[in-house]
Amino acid sequence: MIKGVLKTWKEDRGFGFISPDEGGKDIFIHISALKGTSRRPVTGDVIYYQVAKDNRGKYKAVNAHIEGVEILEDKAAAGFFYTKQGIVLVMLALVAIVAAVVALNL
Image (spheres, rainbow, N blue to C red):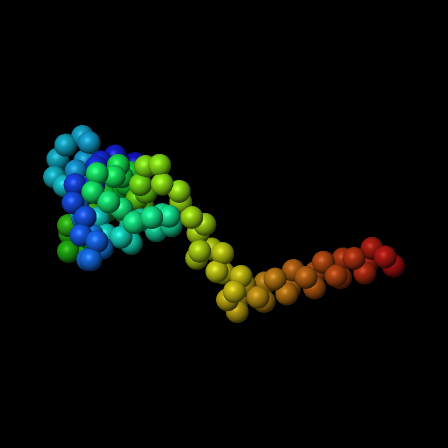
């Protein structure tokens, strides 16, 4: 992970720029790179991030988090159990458990 300071943040647009601690060009960061953080970023926050190229070949921050800010539960993973596939998987697991209990009692 790379460490930097959030130099600018445009709350109304959901993006800003990080000044890397090791120098170099500022890195673009979009709010989507901060998935799961418990609060929105503010100028001056210390950000840990990875760098990737966007579809136009420009560098951007990804997989970022704010130093000292809690990361909330991964809602996508938890949401799996509320999908059709998740419900089917849970039902199959329950059927297997019931079958095992019945088999052990015979």
